[in-house]
Image (cartoon, rainbow, N blue to C red; front, side, top):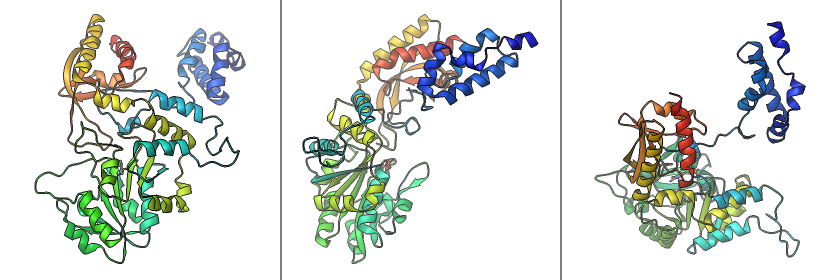
Length: 436
Ligand SMILES: *Cc1c(COP(=O)(O)O)cnc(C)c1O
């Protein structure tokens, strides 16, 4: 036993190993040291032979300094909140890389003077939504609503339909957020029905703004009525009250596949003074909140002291610009993938898994948008069906694969998996299931 312990490589010797020198450069000395100490202990406890220590240290090291793991989203949920909503496009990732260094984010190189922060990102948004006179970007859509409510309605009333008092997820309730700004809510109408007269009766000298919210994650069916933006805009104009509309899911223009999802352009054309939306839902970009609207309204928001606290990071601005002006996003590709293409990928993957002795078959499936978008819409998709018990094991694969369990099967739905990840998916599934 004593001999065995003496053979365990010492810390300084391990730190001099080229593979660990490289790891220190990538991950920092403290992380590598911690992995060494823990692995040496395993060797002292007899779990590992001294000769296995270096390999075990390398295996114990995290994949990146961020502590995040890349994951394959085979759930069939396009915008999975727990997987970070929209994945960035290759163009946006490159923009992130570039923006992470020293850049001219607030400098006009022609004059050497100060430039407007994020002016190229703002220009890209303005070009994407010509109906907007002005654009502003904050940290997320919740921040956009806070900025609007604080600027336009602090100490005053926000008139809002009872059918639009929504909870977004993880206990985030829009009414609580609005009230936190010092505004009071003036609820009008009923859960299922709100009429223009309800709004007209509530608007008065104490009204700061009228808020229209897209109930993005549920749908009321049956005996229902709500007031379209166009009608509400007319009323607000008559009364001189700003109409703010929260479109939520990030479509800048109508999306034929999702006819019930509102979009920024249409709501502006219908007369909303300000439309807010998220950057990391159907827009397919980084987490941020976008505000489009009338120049005087956007300007008031931009100049409010709170705007500084909600200011978006330079890396986000770069990713946003590449998302809006660049090639189609992975979210767009996933939404628009044809079922025939997905089926042939599923068949091919199932064939290759069966070749390796794994019980797999291609099946038709149904995907959803998710992330609190397009409730009730299902998108015909295709999946590889595996034994139900595979799901838990695949989550611990490298990379982890998140599947969906349905009707006693583990489904690998391909709609949210970029086609160029099929080989990685196959390798991970094979490595996990071959061990059974
Ligand atoms: C998602 C959503 C929000 C919250 O947006 P975040 O960007 O997550 O802050 C607010 N309103 C609606 C209608 C939404 O769909």
